[in-house]
Image 1 (cartoon, each protein chain N blue to C red):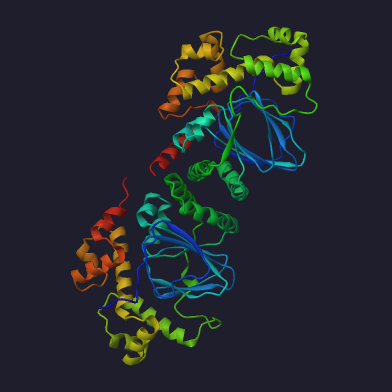
Image 2: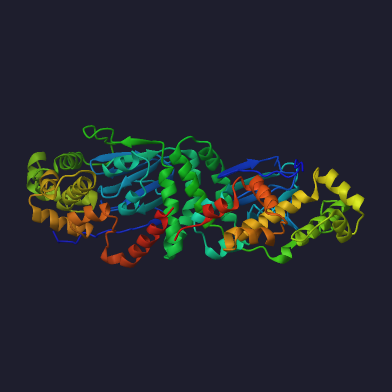
Length: 305
Length: 283
C-alpha cells in the first residue's frame, strides 16, 4: 500500500454553511467544533468509539481532536458548522461543566428551538466575518462565538459513561468492520498492530487493512495514532500527569513515538502544547501565523471586558 | 419648586418590547439607547429641539441624556429598546468615531434588514436572559448586547433628515407646530437666562399662552425642560472634556452651583465628580 501523508487539518476560527457529503474520511483537528444539519433524516457520525445519530433538530458540540467521520447523511442537507481553537475557548472561562465535558471527549447535544432560530440567522453573518480576515471583525466574531457557547446550556451528554459506548447500527456496515472498529477503540491504549487486530478478529491482515481503509479513508495505524494523540491531548489539558506517564497511559510505545506523533498532528511538542494553553500563549501553526497573531491581539482586546 | 413633570428613568442594562410605550412626557436617562418601532407608520420622536421620523426599518442609537419623547406612535406599533449604562458602554470601546459622535449628542440610524431579522429573534432571548437570576446568564446578555452594538452599521443622522418643524403631511396638528417652535427656541437658548416673557417673545406668543402651554401640555414648567437640556450638556462636557466642574456648570447655563448640584443629583443620582470617574475608561 502506498504511503500517504495524513493531511493536517487546521481551521482556526472558522464558520461555514455548505452541503456535506457522506464520503467524508475519518479525521481530526485541534479545534472545538459546533455543528448541525438541516436535513430530512438523522445524520450518523462516528466520534472515536461512539457512533451517534444526530437528529435534524440537534446541535452537536465536541472537541475535534476526537477522530470523527460523517458516515451517513441524506443528499438533501445543509451543514452549519463553526470551529474555535481550544486556546481561545479555554480562555473564555465558560460556566462549568461545559469545558470539562468537552475536553474529556464528551459529545454535547443541544435541542433548543430558539437557539436554532438564532443560529440560522447568525451563521451567514459569521461566515462573512470569518472570511473577512480583518482584525476588528475577527475580534467581534470571537465575541459572537463566546456568546453562542455560553448559551449552549441545555445539553445531553454522550456517551453517558466510558463503558457504555453508544453504537448506532449502520445499515451496510460490515460485521467484521464493526468488530474491528470496536476492538481498536477499546484497546488503542495497549500495543496494537494490524496483524494483532487481524488475529483477534480472525481475518487476514491484508483484508483487515483494506476493509478499514475503505470504510474510513485512512490507514489503521493512522487511526490508532489519532486516538492516542487525542488521549494525550486530553491528559495534557485536564490532568497533571507528566509526559512520561502520558506516554504509557495513552498507549505510545516510547517517548520518541509520542513526540513524533504529537508533532505530526499538533505541530508542537506535548509540553509546549500544555504550556501554551496554560500560559495563555497561542500555538502557532506554520500555516496561519498571521491569522493567529491577529487573533491573539484581538483576544487581549476582549479580555479587558 | 415642585417637579412632577420631568422624571428621570434609571434603567441600567435593560431591554424591552412595549406595545404601549410609557413615555408621553419628555425625559432623559443615563446611558445609550438603541430602539426601533414596528410595525406601522413611522414613529415620530422629539430630541430636544428636533423631530425625527423613524421609519419601521430604522434602528436608532443615541445618548439618552438628550431629552426625548415619543410624539406619535400608531396604536399597534411596538417599541423595541435596549439601554446600556454609560460606564459599561464606554468600557466596550466601540468604534471611536462613533462613540465620540454619540457623546456629542449625535443620533445614529441604521437600516440593515439582516441585523433587523437577528434583532427580532434576539429580543425574546435577551428578555429571558435579563430576567434570569444566574450571573453567568446576565454576563452573556451583556456580551450579546456588546456584540449587537459592535455590529451597529453606523450612519450619522444627517441634518436633512431631522427637522424642527413637522412635515405638512404629518399626522400631527397645527398645535404641534407651535409646540415645536417652543422646543426649538429652548434648545437653542437654554444656556441663557430665560423667563416666560423672553420665551413668549422668541416663539411669538403671549406670556399667558406660554404659561398655559407648559401647564396644560407638559404639566410642568419650562424650567424643568431647560434643566434637562443643561444637565445633558453638562454630562457631555464631563465625559468629553477635562473642564472643571464649576466651568461646566457655568458653560451649561446654570447660574448657581447649588442649583447645578441639585439638578445633577436628581437626574443622575450621583455627583458630577463620581459620574466623571465612573465613565473614565482606563488605558
